[in-house]
Image (cartoon, rainbow, N blue to C red; front, side, top):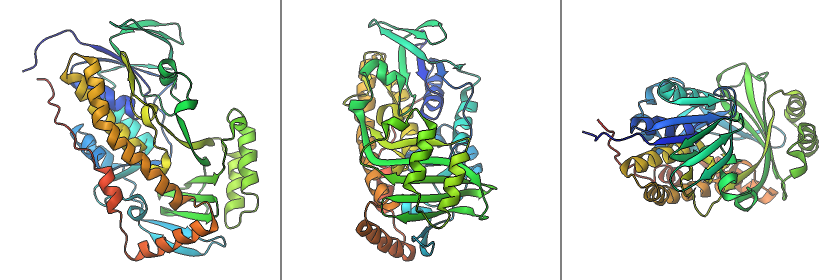
Length: 400
């Protein structure tokens, strides 16, 4: 039986994937948890994500696997096209991602976020429409001032607030030294499913560019992505949606197939999301009583296909390590020692993902196409599967 002691209080910044997953596990271990989220509610929608490898075991231990399997999209084919729109090869998703058919789960990002929130919303305090303005770690507690003016004190603070983490900036400084640009930019948006595409995707490549249309299940909406190689990040476009649309349109101005229709839809899309493809590499994931988890600590980029999965794994391990000792420093050290090798192996997948999805040159594209034709005959993803499952979860016993 667990011994009675005052609950330790933890503030988590971010209510997407890592934050609610960490909140769920910390609450189960007896912590008093508050989650602050800049958005006014849990954000739904979003493109599909995958829960693979060790992360499947995490959601199973959390009791969420049945709900996630009910939302499984079941993508059946990814078809790659040449510049004229002719088929190069049609392969299973597992041939591209290295996933395990029948075990991994693909679902809309919003479905995973909702499942995590629903599992803990009655047990954890959520502060929506707010964010952390300042942190003061006095060695015994962390005094927090929120943007709303609210002031609170917590035993620990964890940043789970994404690639451009405000918590990380407060404890480690500006993002630039830790931001590793992977020489690609992307624009994501939705558009009508005029092709009648179902349970699959179409990928058109020319050197340094990819146009992707993806239908998660049977839907009248397509997820569209325009991704391109660029040697320097377009910093001047980050704060200007019009400049983003102009940049993407200029890169794809001479595109064939469905590209002109995609560019037109991108111009008008109310849900356009533009960003660079990048990772976060930090020398350490904690400072004093403040730690980071998920993309805030180690964003792998969407080219790895593992952002949500390693966020779930990291949250589970961090909660267990904090529950195993009253010394937060020892817990943070143990968490990082266990998870960092797993993260680094998964971050490395992004380089292979970039070569598959957006080959830079005609030569690289030709080699990729040859590999795709071979994969359509004999799909294989054993190496990636090994990486996805390369962390053995510790058996953290929940208190009675």
